[in-house]
Image 1 (cartoon, rainbow, N blue to C red):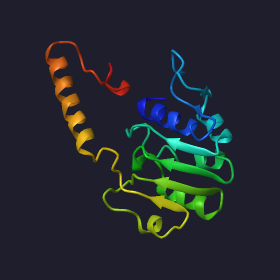
Image 2: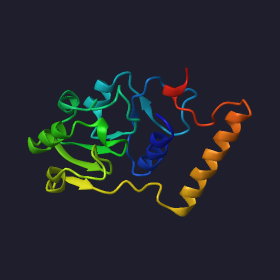
Image 3: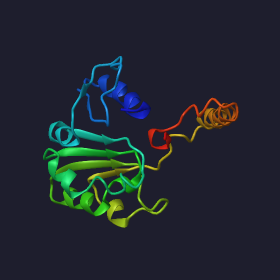
Image 4: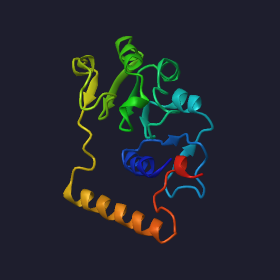
Length: 169
């Protein structure tokens, strides 16, 4: 569970939701909020009423959430994708919703942004929002400063401050 997942988990706890997570590795040291690590994505999907996707889009994750994953989810569960649109197989999502296996979905990312599949727009089981989490002046300014800090750190031979795991080699 990275920074986004952790921030989301803290908010969910305020709504008395039990938080379970799956990640490549269990978080160590343990987070300062109540959560339970499960050892596989399959276990997470079997237990969860709401599944929130918080992962990068890369060759390994592209369309990695599809028919098999939807079938493993609890009947009547909810999918929230605020990660990247390409992580979810859009047709498999629509099938899971139309069959009634999924109760609903919340999306603010789409595979062909800025274009949105008309089937998503017309489905009343889906809540769609534009991806605008960073659309404040304060957040934009902080992002600009972080980029400059990363460049300075790299040029000083200290490495990147916010390097993601896939870049570390």
